[in-house]
Image (tube, rainbow, N blue to C red; front, side):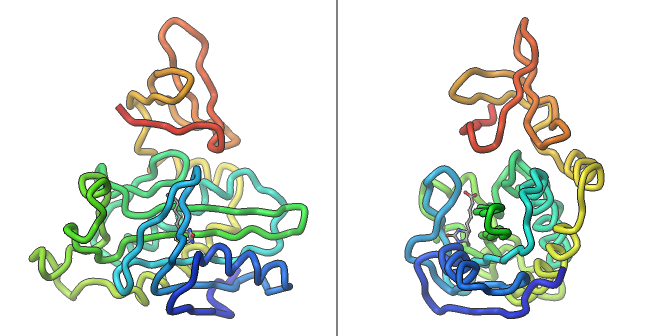
Length: 242
Ligand code: BTN
């Protein structure tokens, strides 16, 4: 699958996912990518807002069509984001289940997939901090978020220069194209190799335990004291890592 053809770029919009869903319903072809400099109502998972800074954050939505409801798509996408990030900058990424992308212990990217398998499409939304200065992050994110490349002001531009938004966009289109065509064990193996949670204490509304990896459908398995393991679905829980 080839992403980025066509490509619609907005200087400002409410949410690139909203634009892409609208275009999907209007018959846009699979491969369409929508990007924006700024979003006035960027959305994250579980009704959260998504912060982005013009020129420093990649705000990206891709239309996958056809889409029949593959349950492993939410695992394949963050692997693609990791590969794109690693191709653009000297970093190593891992995935915090279900689909946050971390560098060390900090979130560099998030994924919001909005799918209508009944209508044959999915919109894959990715927000990726490319070079957001730490002091420009909202206070509540400052110790939990990071960027792909430290900014010049932070004194850490790597040899060869910091990646541009266009570098990252190009790598993401390529990596996503590979990963949406991957299925089953070809997704589960690489996901497990990047699993940042395995062996970590986690808590959710219903309890606490130790993450023990993912099952064949991408659910999180959690060992709980004195009981049978609990299996969590991505849509159901807000997970905290202890
Ligand atoms: C999350 O981690 O909660 C997911 C964040 C997804 C944010 C991206 S930014 C581009 C696209 N448009 C949106 O409104 N959301 C996604």
